[in-house]
Image (cartoon, rainbow, N blue to C red; front, side, top):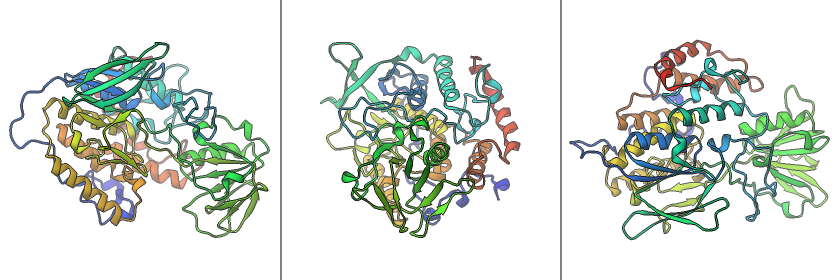
Length: 487
């Protein structure tokens, strides 16, 4: 029962395929906690790539540990994907390599799908009580409120002085001495700058390189295609017949928003059986289908459920790919069907640990507290305060995790899907760092929101049953209010 939860790990948190296969994450097979005394911490020069949520908290934790930090950010502002722009890419499908990349995937109306208390950093409250005049104090606020929170975080922890804005990292490569050569170029400068670092922490996010569904006959289909990465507002879809591929959070939101303008909306979901399509409750112009069987030159789209529709637009809400075009590791680290690896605990490549680390790869999680705990661990390992296992032990752990994924029937692309395993994972990280486990209210709030999203898909952001957890969060936040300056 949820009210009886006293420990951070429970089979009720685990998706069905993992009920019998959880040994890799909890308990971990290898630990970075040293059995004996560790040497005094060392200060390293560390490059952080990206100034979004993961990069900002990584910079803070690295500096707290005594490291010398430089953050490279290609944009003009901190916040990463939370920096909204109405501009979209020149190629609406985002497959043209010559396109000017737009980092954000936000649409204008986006609200968070987690409550603000749950998604906050552990020691920096994201409380409705702190929302400034003109802000959005709702539990599930609009994207601009999250950006304000992140930029306040950067201000209050004095991180702006560490960031080189409008500076794109062109190349990261290890030299003969085992240090890292980082080549970067600032917007408007004629040439590149090359520097040497002891460590590199990759925080470039994974919401800017879209995945495109493979559809039979699509190359001769005459309609328009978009990826949700380039969706901003619904008006361009007025009176159109639109197919949306996917049934994730963004697909759900976008389909409902477009339905107010489009003639028809047809959602294609691979989790749907090949049975007759179903009209969606409360909508007279929206249907849920199984996957697409094929497309044709006359503009029709045929679904595996047997229905055939003449379609104007196909919108791919099919997710994103991990992409590190700047990183050269001589194939020590690869991306194979969205599996970045091999990575110990989704962070360290065993052959390059601890000088190369990745923050923020796991998905289906509450991201900000996970980023924070990952960053604390990386900072401690880099300084030598936290010891690390051998290359073989780390590689064995990675192989065991891969074996469990395979045994559970999950594809490679789910390697970094922690689903509800995030809390055992977070608490393991916390243990390595000597940090308290994730607050019980945060775990309960995450689970309650997940259930409420299913029970009230149309209005879970405004109606909930976990209000009794908010005072517990606010009580915890009181310990950290000294970090916060009101905007």
